[in-house]
Image 1 (cartoon, one colour):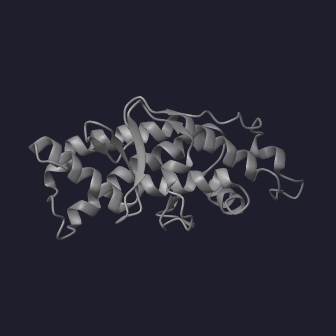
Image 2: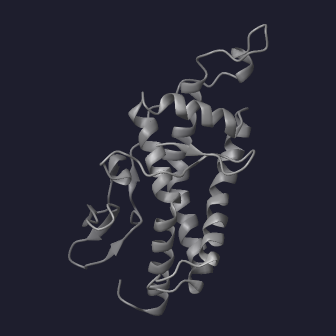
Length: 214
C-alpha cells in the first residue's frame, strides 16, 4: 500500500489497493445493530452490510454501528523536540504522529466520512448513469471534489498538531509494514476514497431516489 501525493501541500491519498485479503471495514472491530451482518461481495471484494429478515443492504455501516475505541496514543511531542543542533529532524517522531492520526480517523472521522459521502451523493448523484457503461470526466471531477473534502480535513488536523502532510507521508511509509493498525487505517482510507467505491455510492443513492431496487 503506497500513498500518492496528488499535489504539493495536499494530504496523501492511498491510491493503490491494499494487498491484504482482509476486507478493510471488517478488519476494524465494530458492533453492528441487531439483525445486521457484514459480508464480502464476491465480485468486488468489498464489504457490504445486510439486515436479516428485511433484505436491506448497504455499502455503508448501518446507523447505530459502534466502533471499538482505540487505546489512547502516547502524547504527541512537538516536532521541534526531534530537531538536533544541526537542524536535522531525528528519529522517533513517526510512530506518535501515525498513532495520533489513527485515533483521530478511526474514532471520529471515519463515520463522518461516510456521512459526508451520503450528503455528497444526495447533491450530485443525479448526474450518474445507473449502468455506468461509460466513465465520464464529470464523474472524475466530482470524485476529486469529494476526495479533496477529506484531504482538507486531514491537512487541517495535521496543522492543528504542528505537522504537515509531508510529515505524515514519511511517517506512514515508515510505519505501515511494522504496525497492523497503521495498515488497517490505510486500507480503510483507500476503500472510502477510491473511485469505484465512490461511483457505487452515487449509483446506489440515485436508485434510492428513483425508487429502483438495489
